[in-house]
Length: 186
Ligand code: 13P
Image (cartoon, rainbow, N blue to C red):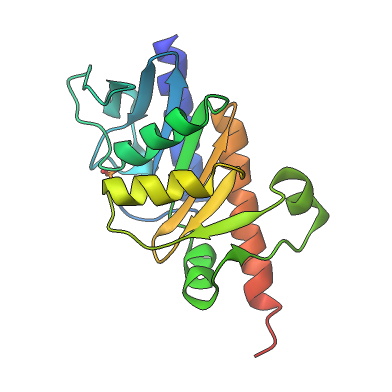
């Protein structure tokens, strides 16, 4: 089971990087299996991530693997605790979403039927320092009634029953931000 989870993390991490949903050292994905969470190791680059760069923690944050978890593990755990239905989390740094968060407050507008069907709403969570408990709290709260949120001046986070679902929701958030930005009347 852990081999499958690790393979999924590698597949979607590389895909996210190649699709431009994150760059350089940014972003981290995770999968929950019961009391265990498989998550990208801190410092690993999603573009060339390997299965060995997967950390395993439990729901209390205890490290179960040799490698250290992403610095955003608090964010992932806060979401899993608040949303037992969620089995995968994607945290990425897509450029249009980050730009939109500097121009908008409240929510990212929903423009297309696809976004309406799959996301319904995209709240914007306030800025808090990366890796902090405060960031975990305000972002998880934004996801109480939504499957996607923009993290102001930082990135986005999406959730799903599978990592595939969380990944495509992330792509849809970035498309929504891009469409909003390009259709703005300035
Ligand atoms: P990690 O390498 O610790 O996952 O950090 C990347 C990141 O995006 C922090 O927000």
